Length: 151
Ligand SMILES: [Fe+2]
Ligand SMILES: [Fe+2]
Image (tube, rainbow, N blue to C red):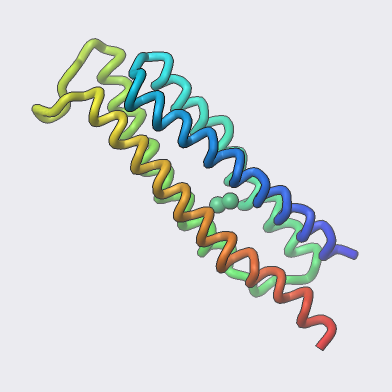
């Protein structure tokens, strides 16, 4: 049944949420307590490789599985909107990281190191809120389509 694929993806995504939040907390701690260029790179790699890959599964694989299950009226854009917000914070983080690597230590008169840690904290917080929204609203909304079949 095509809906099984949808369920499978949702359960994989939910598992990934736990792993991603765990790593984002670790990076947050590293940036706050043990700041280094290595910590910056870890943060950027985490975003580019892991968080973006996760978002792509939602935007592509999940979307495709929904189509295949005949669910055409779920608003996937609502889910994608959260990803764009994360992208914007990530862009700012990249900008600050570049400044730091060029040897700058201040950003608008403030300590650049603290700004980087603060920006990653904002990313981590937004990520957490986004995952909560998915698990509490979007994913249950999708699962409702399965129940409706038996009504
Ligand atoms: Fe997402
Ligand atoms: Fe997600």
